[in-house]
Image 1 (cartoon, rainbow, N blue to C red):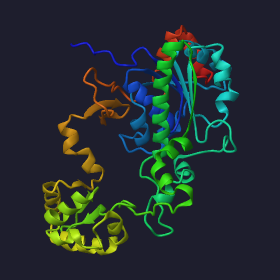
Image 2 (image 1 turned 30 degrees about the vertical axis):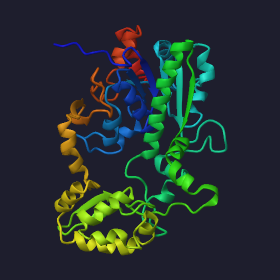
Image 3 (image 1 turned 90 degrees about the vertical axis):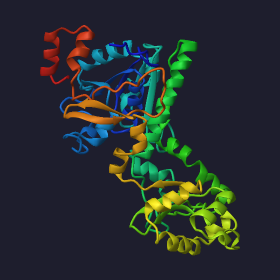
Image 4 (image 1 turned 180 degrees about the horizontal axis):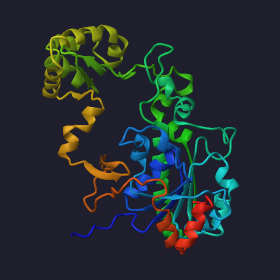
Length: 399
């Protein structure tokens, strides 16, 4: 059997007081790169994301997605006997991640200022809705609420006043999780130079506001913000979904005037359209999109989706299928690049996509999704607890 090449975070230990998506998504990225992630969960209940649904062999889709390759330790942090256990874990840890309710970690003595004197090399990453300080510091925050506060909803959805739409996945949580992940990697590099741990304060609001840079600058200095345009681009046209004669839908996008000319010649088969004064610049096409849409729809109504895509490919116009989830599971590009692995869960094996970014030096870690408290006994024994001590802790409800 060939030995596994070293991964970037082999030997790094992460303790996480996490629930929902933002922190678990962050720590799963760390686990993918080889870190040991000890996930602390409430006895009997666990991370409440375990109960979101039962779509994956009786398990939650959110939980399966964000929690592979971790160890689950049940620990009631309100029990007096839990404090020395957590201290022992942090004494050996490199990183503490938490996204508890605002202020909860500090009240338990888990703020950076309190921990740094005892564990000077420990990196502490706090993930919250609005960050430390400011009038929103203690305000509860969930993904949809942050999408609203960050202005995401104002530019997403259809043009009608009541047609705003949330993203179909947890974009605010994902943004915060990824910024926490990249900040932790930076903090590990910094510690390598200074020998000292540091404090990371990640705000979901600030993470998603960063992603809103284009619409914010488009509306700079009181200018009109980009209109909501459904699945179409708000300022570039044609750029969006178009129906075809077989009932399908094709997504296409033009970026410049050279592509517009090719689109007219090779896709629309109407070369003269390229110089039509209504459409001979992007801002004109965007202003007159209803008229142009009618012309495109007329041509595409005589073609199947695959015929339209063939014309677009021939013209080297960017395009895509409008896939549903079944289409993504069966995507030929993902299969051709061998992007799927199997991971074990308490309900059985499931396919899992490799993390983005292929490094030929090593394979990402793709281990099992843990059952609640699956590793409690093993972790405590590693900390020096005898079997009878573990039994006592379990009977007392500490674990």
